Length: 82
View (cartoon, rainbow, N blue to C red):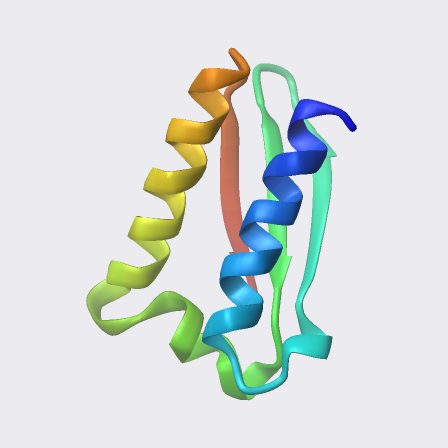
């Protein structure tokens, strides 16, 4: 299992436990110049749960991702797609 694959699973796990429709959670990796970008898609009605009040939940997920990515010496960005 590659490093970013485990990060995808981490974000997927966190998101599935936040939303009402865990089957709609999808995490895709997109390679960019300097970093890997993880695109998180959830059901439209669950978008608010993933973002949280004033973006706190999204910020917390990005913090966890950043800490885990540091361990594998990668720069990874989380984008929450609408």
